[in-house]
Image (cartoon, rainbow, N blue to C red; front, side):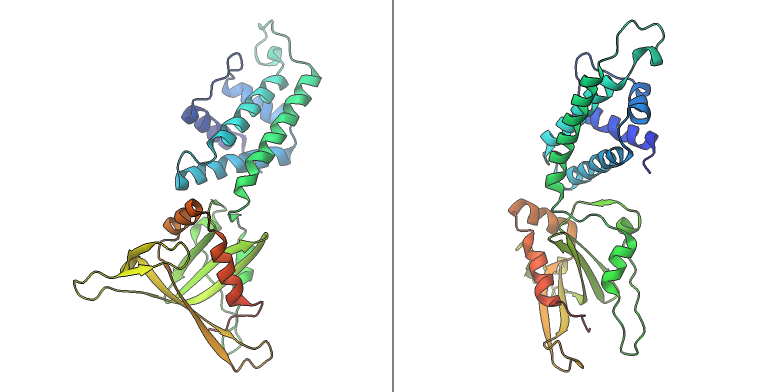
Amino acid sequence: MVQTDDLLAQLNEVINKKRIRIPGLQLTDDGISFALTQGGLPAESIQKFALLLQAYQAGQSIYGLHFHNALLIRMVESFLVFARSTINPNQLDPTSQTEPLSALARNTNEQILMRNMAAAQEPLDQFLGVLRRDQVASLFKWKTKTGKARPVVLPKPIDAGEFLPFTYISWTIEKRMYLVTKRDNLLMGLEMTYSQLQPRGNVPRMGLCDFCHGQYKIHETASITARVPTSKLPPYQNYKSVGRYICVDHVGCNQKLYTSNKQGRVAQFVESVNQNTPLIL
């Protein structure tokens, strides 16, 4: 459930940062809180509005303030217009002589807000978004050779329920790398062996990331290997190793994937390796 104070703080941060000013519609914090709590907006719509604010703030921190800035401003502006139409000034200020807007105006403004929220959602569908802990953990329920389940430690952003403005997220635990991405709204996970390449002496070496095709110093590139069965029939006696070089820093890699519009490379790789069979590493 969204806390009104938290949502109000997020909203004010966006309003101040984007310098959103609508003549005749300047609302106090009490006015906005009134609209959120007593304006008649469904709880699920308020929840979605809060998530969109969080998502755009996260996206702009990664990809720059230009990240679909017009959609964000339009959504916030339409919310302020809606908020103003829900308020009876007499309930906030007994001395006010202003008449509240009609129910028709309120319903119209709510419909405009819903349309702008739907438009703001579209650019975010390509990202992972908010992932539940159990949702991600279920991707890595592989068993060891002894038949015991091997749990995976999840990174803090997933545990904290943060919006992930990434095509994929990866993290390492000792000599293993875990990667999560999605394709057609279906989450996919991959567990691989991992080794960070080291330079040889003073001679600079470069590595090429197979995802973003960016060239990096060798210590910024990781060698990943997935050992997968070539046959879907047990006991999986035939194996092949699928190796790639990818960025150690998944944030920088995601930035380049977004800029080049090549986000599909990651999902294609995971899908080709997984082949709908459990990985045996």
